[in-house]
Length: 117
Image (cartoon, rainbow, N blue to C red; front, side, top):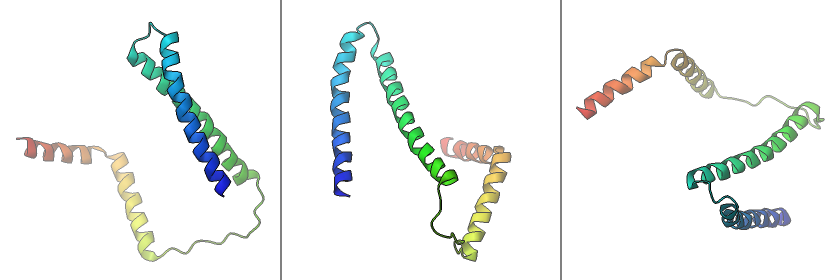
């Protein structure tokens, strides 16, 4: 467990160092690009990189879910009646608000008019 923790810390430090190195180098290579576009490209690259990592992780989860062997028998989780009631009420409220969002929008507009006038 300790080695996994150390590897994670090393990976975080290494990524921070590589990011710090890449900024000046990319600015030198791409002199004509405005700073806003440069920031957008850097965020786009980070987003693509994180998407690749998350796809790898979630595909492993899906593989285990559908193709992995279960070594233990699964039993239902006991849920109290109050929890079932709370979940049912929450589900009904979410469905109603999804179908009729104007209920909330009109209420918010009315309250904002009161406070802003």
